[in-house]
Length: 279
Image (cartoon, rainbow, N blue to C red; front, side, top):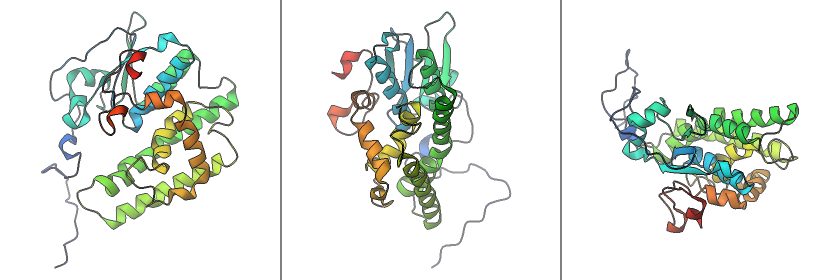
């Protein structure tokens, strides 16, 4: 028997969970669900996160800063278990009203500064430490072009392709085809750029690379949604070259372990409070 097509009602109502892996944390309202203060460690930089692609961006940048000798970049990284609703605590919502990881508090001055949205955190830290963001107008603008490209493009990869291909309760051809096409178009954008540039902003490794790599680098290397073969990732040779080069950076290897609670045990570090935690 043919399944009847879905006809949207005149007024949508949240009558039942939509299903899928993350259905239990999705809701149509914002704000906290429970009272809970966030822990605070000894360092000025307090990160509340999980090692998703968005979370990994920040820990990679912090580890890169530490590798350059910026001791003020020492940080405490606290685990936020999004499948358990930690991001809806009153403490977390106070830092990020959008209840998404990562969120950062800089307590280095008299008035703590909250920073949320991964792109904003990368820009904040790059400017604070004057690293990984060129100062010349051309280099700075090109870096920000690709940083904001990632912020606008990744929802099509994650919430679009990734959701319908990997997490949706049923496989539907239309959304999978639609978002696979868009993901391949984005990979082609990157491949063309990287065909004659070592990094996204040119010859210099910047926060643009740090933002894009955890999503698109992981995708072509087979570490995201198990979709490399489905998307013919081997076709994007320049993206693969760039992704493999960045993957070999010691700070990248360290940063991707922080707040990770899945995979090989040797790659997991639920919380990080000092550099020696990663030894």
